[in-house]
Length: 151
Image (cartoon, rainbow, N blue to C red):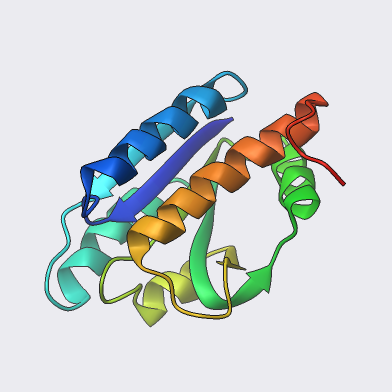
């Protein structure tokens, strides 16, 4: 399964990029991951056009947008969902999308297969991206039977 993490805007601080890279290495032991960064622009119009080209060109992909109004997934629920997609031959890729300073457009969220709530509050995009990285690693660790996740 192709896993793509798509984020609007580069990290604000180099420390975030170091942490992203650390988790990307860990995730890649379980599943390949591609990171796509779209340059943040003022407003949503340019970002929406760039995102939609990335997201909705292949009907065999699933798109999950991070949004505070989405469904809250526990780590085991995320692991189960990833496993379901991974074992479904009609799903070729998973797109996880993190908005920039202006979030994601309504049209992008409406086209998404799922909205994933990382927090009831609004998070800065770099922090949201770090949480997604960690939760992906945790989910793959659960699937692999690793001791990383404790219940």
